[in-house]
Image 1 (cartoon, helix red, strand yellow):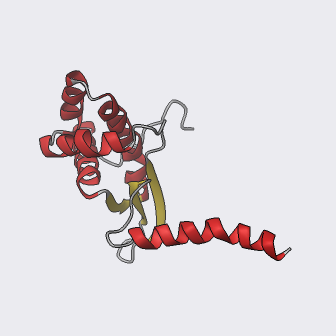
Image 2 (image 1 turned 180 degrees about the vertical axis):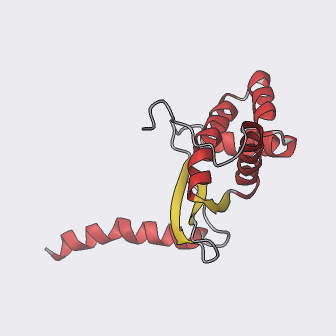
Length: 145
């Protein structure tokens, strides 16, 4: 039975897991979207969301806590200057995990973890057009009736 076993160890020592999580979270911050195994995505999600919560307040103490956790000053700078202000109005749920299926080499479950407001470069117009079409579609249906 798994009583009191909430944290996944990922088959590593605690220091190795801590370093892995720090690297994955800094990669998520720098690239806005990473592909990894489902187990790793589920482990880094709470850490990434806590880092965004720190970035939203933006104090020096919070910045030092973030540097201590993810160990990458460039990622912390981007977190506090770009990502934190972007989620200022949001109360939580900053990341999304999309399941991609199984990896061909070892059949591991693969997932994509990204920020919820992430859009591929060059698709901003497509998303706006889809939103406009969705907004006008119900109005046209009412006119037809």
